[in-house]
Image 1: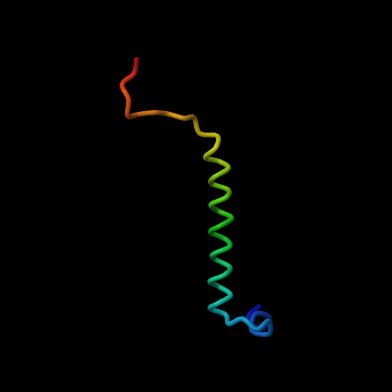
Image 2: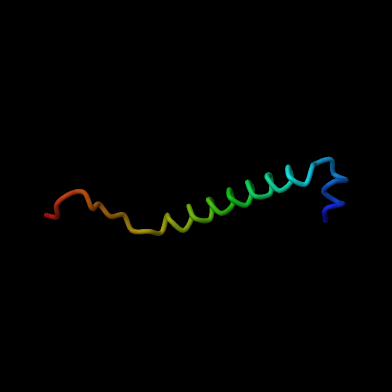
Length: 48
Protein backbone atom coordinates (compact mmCIF):
# COMPACT_ATOMS: atom_id res chain seq x y z
CA UNK A 1 0.00 0.00 0.00
CA UNK A 2 2.82 2.40 0.83
CA UNK A 3 4.41 1.83 -2.57
CA UNK A 4 1.08 2.65 -4.22
CA UNK A 5 0.82 5.89 -2.22
CA UNK A 6 4.37 6.91 -3.08
CA UNK A 7 3.76 6.08 -6.74
CA UNK A 8 0.70 8.34 -6.82
CA UNK A 9 2.81 11.42 -6.10
CA UNK A 10 1.56 11.99 -2.57
CA UNK A 11 3.76 11.53 0.44
CA UNK A 12 2.61 9.00 3.00
CA UNK A 13 2.02 11.72 5.60
CA UNK A 14 -0.01 13.84 3.17
CA UNK A 15 -2.08 10.80 2.21
CA UNK A 16 -2.78 10.01 5.86
CA UNK A 17 -3.84 13.61 6.52
CA UNK A 18 -6.29 13.57 3.59
CA UNK A 19 -7.56 10.11 4.53
CA UNK A 20 -8.28 11.04 8.14
CA UNK A 21 -9.84 14.36 7.10
CA UNK A 22 -12.19 12.48 4.77
CA UNK A 23 -12.92 9.94 7.51
CA UNK A 24 -13.75 12.74 9.98
CA UNK A 25 -16.03 14.39 7.41
CA UNK A 26 -17.92 11.13 6.80
CA UNK A 27 -18.19 10.55 10.56
CA UNK A 28 -19.59 14.09 11.01
CA UNK A 29 -22.17 13.48 8.27
CA UNK A 30 -23.19 10.20 9.89
CA UNK A 31 -23.52 11.86 13.29
CA UNK A 32 -25.56 14.66 11.73
CA UNK A 33 -27.98 12.12 10.28
CA UNK A 34 -28.32 10.36 13.64
CA UNK A 35 -28.70 13.66 15.51
CA UNK A 36 -31.67 14.61 13.32
CA UNK A 37 -33.63 11.83 15.02
CA UNK A 38 -33.09 13.27 18.52
CA UNK A 39 -36.17 14.86 20.08
CA UNK A 40 -36.02 18.62 20.50
CA UNK A 41 -35.86 19.61 24.18
CA UNK A 42 -35.70 23.07 25.71
CA UNK A 43 -34.15 22.84 29.17
CA UNK A 44 -33.75 26.60 29.63
CA UNK A 45 -37.40 27.60 30.07
CA UNK A 46 -39.79 26.79 32.87
CA UNK A 47 -42.44 24.23 32.08
CA UNK A 48 -45.99 25.45 31.87
